[in-house]
Image: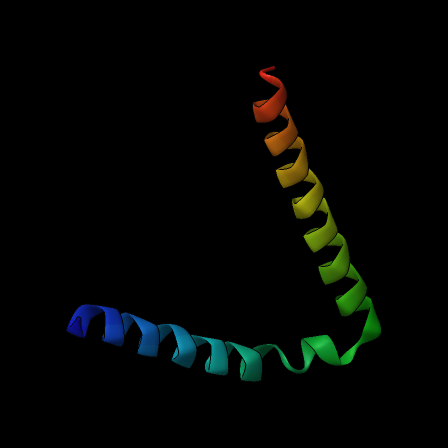
Length: 57
């Protein structure tokens, strides 16, 4: 239980420090477009993988 709690604390702390570190980068709209594109590609890859597994190919 202590390990899970400390891992959760570390995760949220790293998100906070990461957000502060990346804030200047994401002040530009182009960075958001690139992030949206990367998320879209990842979602398409996951959907393709799930469909391949369902169809048995």
